[in-house]
Image (cartoon, rainbow, N blue to C red):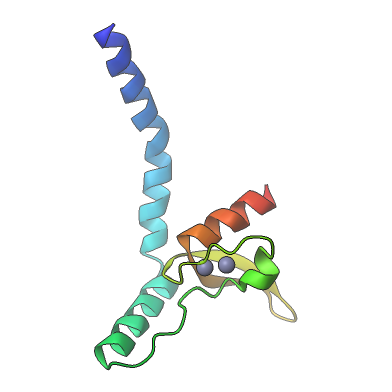
Length: 102
Ligand SMILES: [Zn+2]
Ligand SMILES: [Zn+2]
């Protein structure tokens, strides 16, 4: 019984590993790092900090207001005439966008 539980836990962590790896890689995205730094500087200067999430919620996921404004990843957006553009996006927004594009 204990062995079965241990194996199940091991299986789950094996399955989550690619996800954890991709989250680590995404958090290292220069675009996100630049956005996080910009917000740190604004806070340090006592300036109002704008939302770091550039997902354009009203367009990207108009039916859900989940944005927490803290960029942790990037999502691909299509902007005319530029085509696909990577934009800093917060975790809840990224999840919403992913859910909608599935
Ligand atoms: Zn959003
Ligand atoms: Zn957001």
